Image (cartoon, rainbow, N blue to C red):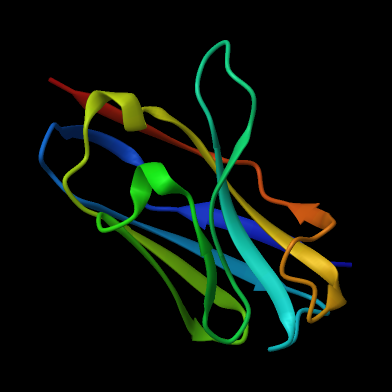
Length: 119
């Protein structure tokens, strides 16, 4: 059984920074891709960034501002800099059950953490 628990969300002013963390428990190994998604009110969930042993994907809207990293096999972080109100969303951590599969499918999901950026 895999569980993902996010932390680090909260309110921040535009231009500020936040660091999200995702702690996995269970059968997650270094070759399992992990990712951050986000979902704003009324919007579809979208992929923000993904990583296996190194980053494999950044969405265009976060390139140069967000950095995904993997502290160890079971902890993935998302450093978010120069935040703007459009980044307001619930951010979800996800993991793929199939090894070396950078595009998922994303079998496991966390509960999400709210990020609110005020102008």
